[in-house]
Amino acid sequence: MLTLTLELTDEQAGTLAQEAARLHVTAQELAVQTLEEHFAGRKRTITEATGRIIAENAELYKRLA
Image 1 (cartoon, rainbow, N blue to C red):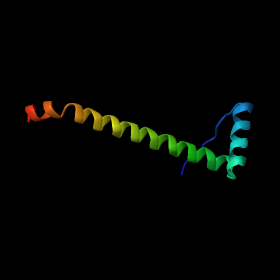
Image 2: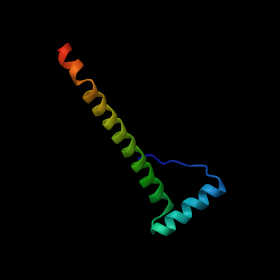
Image 3: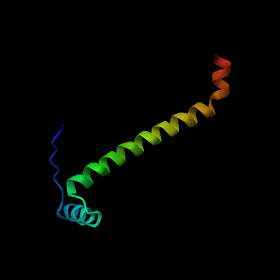
Image 4: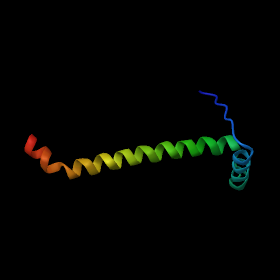
């Protein structure tokens, strides 16, 4: 497990605290959830792009095989 310390501006800290309170979670839980969603989104984007490239080049791959 990694312990991470973040330096946030007062505005960022306030926004994090307000959003965490609105969602009835701690600021730490919200930060972890936000990071997980960010990385999951990037993984989906990469997977979608790879699928699109493979589909676009399917005919070329057949000819090269």
